[in-house]
Length: 222
Image 1 (cartoon, one colour):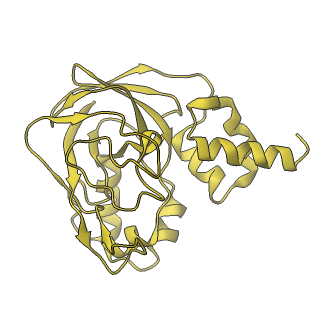
Image 2: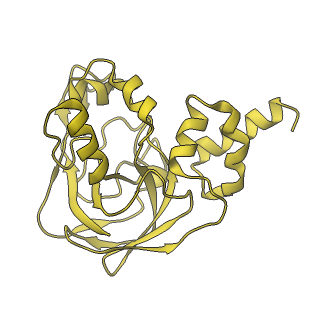
């Protein structure tokens, strides 16, 4: 398992965002050299965990529990075949493009060591948005991406460090609860009956998903 590329985005004007400044950082590009990764701070105030990466819409993106977004090269290759077009690393807005790692099936709370220093923890899958659809220029993309369910994973920073393309990725902690990023995605989007199962992941789960699961269970009289 290895890190194929580290991808950073700049603030770029876009007609596909309702962010007040009309800019987005979704168009991320691979960079050379090391990139420092740290916990950025609370959502709504802080952006990306990667130095030099721009997160523009702080309402929905960034913050400690969405500090890093990872997506598997294998899933990009699958989409290339389906869409009939090249999809370079970073084009899904991912910070990390991986090889040999099933990112969507990573467990909530699973921890990865990348390189010699950085340790990340999986918190949730990624919910597609209008900006993502506009960026790719694919009609019906939100529904299509949701239907496939290969969401990639958001991660929080447990131990900060520098990373670069080519670094090895090692799974250093794998919980036993069975709640994957893909399951969390389905539970919070199209299969709400799965929400009670998310509680097994506890506080490793993204706080918004945890609150949604608890609210659902309470409403069901659990």
